[in-house]
Amino acid sequence: MAELVNLPLWIVIVLLALAVLAIVDHLLLPGVRWFVRRRVNRVVEELNTRLRLKIKPFKLTKRQVLVDRLAFDPEVLKAVEATALEENIPRDVVMARVHTWAKEIVPAFNAYFYFRIGCWVAQKLACSLFRVRLGYIDDDGHAGVPADSSVVFLMNHRSNMDYILIAFLAASRTALSYAVGEWARIWPLQSLIRTMGAYFIRRRSGDQLYRKVLERYVHMATQAGVVQAVYPEGGLSRHGYLMTPKLGLLSYMVRSFDPEGERDLVFIPVGVNYDRVLEDRSLILEGQPEHVSRGLFHTALMLSRFALRNVWLMFRGRWHRFGYACVNFGSPISMRELHRHSGLDFRNLEKEELFKEVESLGAHLMEKIGEKTLSELEIKTEAHELMTELEAAGAHIYIPRSDRDYAFTVGLRMLTLRHIVEESDGIYRTREEDLAILEYYAASIAHHLEKLREVAR
Figure 1: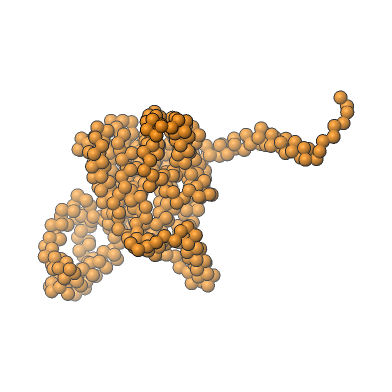
Figure 2: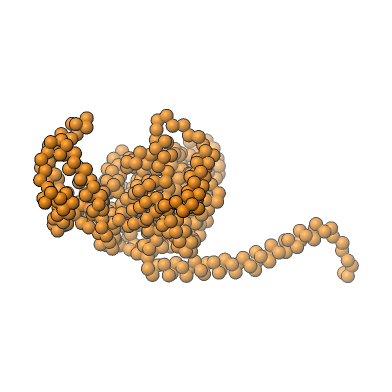
C-alpha cells in the first residue's frame, strides 16, 4: 500500500486539469450562478416597481424550457407528423430540424445586461451620433393601456440605428423583444442580440414547418404578454417611402387573439426619422434595378472607410453629429376595442378572408405609423413653399401686414386654439377626429392645387 507509483508527466497534467475542472464545476460555478441570478432578480424587482409595462415571467423563464415548450407544442407536433409523411422521412429527422429552429428563434433575455449595459450603450451611441428628440407621445392614451395587455410597438424601418434608438427611448417604460433578420446571425453579434431579448427569423423561408414553429413562438410570447417590437415593412426602405407591410408576424399575433380572453392585444404605432440616415447612399444604390450586390466583404470595407473617415474628422476637430433623430409614439390601437366596434374575430375567418382582414389592418397600422408631425419651423417652411408655388401659378394671396411669418403664426394659433391641431414640446400634429374640418377649408383652394398638378405633369 505504501509503494510509489510512477506516472508520465502528461498523465499528471491531465489529472490535475480534471481536478481543477471538477472543483470549478462543483464549487465555484454554482456560487457564480447563484450570485448572477441574485443580481438579476434584484434588477427585475427594482425595474418592475417603475416600468409601466413590467417584465413578464415568460422573458425570465430558462431558455431551454422555452425551447422544449416550442418544439413539443401540440400544433408543431402535428405539423411534424404531416411533414414526415409528406416527405417520407423519419419523424426524428424532422424533429431535429424543429429543435434547430427553436434554438435559433428563442431569445436568452438578461434583464441586467439589457438595462444596465445595453440601454446605457444605446443611449451613449445614439446621443453621440444624433441630437435625439422625443417628438410626440400620447401619454394619456398610453396610460389607459391595461398593464396586463400584450403590447406591440409597430415601427417604420429607416436605419439599423432604429433598434438602438427605440430601445433607449423605450427603456423607461419597458423592455422590448425584437424580431431580427438573418443579417445579425453572426458571432458574437447573435449572442448579444439574444441577450437583449431579440428573436431571429428567416424572412425568406418558404418552409411551412418553419413558419409553423415561428408562428407558435410568436403566439406563446404574445399570449404571455411579452412587449414586442415589429417592423411591418420587413426591411429597410430603399426609397424613403413607407413600404407595403409584410403580414406574417402580424397575422400570427391576431389570428389566435381572443377578444374575451385574459389579455388585450394593443398596437402602438411608432414613427422614426433622421436628418441623415447613415446607410442612405447604400440603400439608394440597392434600390436601383441595375444594382448588383458585391458581397459581405465589400459592405464591410465600405463601413470601415466610413468609420475611419469620421474618426479622422474627430481628430481634426471638424466632426459634427448627423443632425436630429426624432421618434413619435402614437395612440394605442386596441384589438379588443376593434372587436367591439366591428365584431371582427380573426379566429373565425377562413384563410382568404383572414388574409384580407389582416391586410386591411396592416394598411391601417402603417397609416398610423406614417402620420406626420411637424415643428413650427417645418410648418412655416412648407407653407411658404406652397404659397410661393400658388403665387407663381397666378393665385392672388392676401398676406396680413405683408408679413408671411406673422400670417403663418396667426393661422397656426387659430388651429391650436380650436384644438384642431395639438402641440406638444414644439411638435404639432392634427387630431384625427378633426381631419374633416381641415379638408373642408383645404377644399377652398383645391382648384389652385389642381392647377399646380397640371403644370407639374
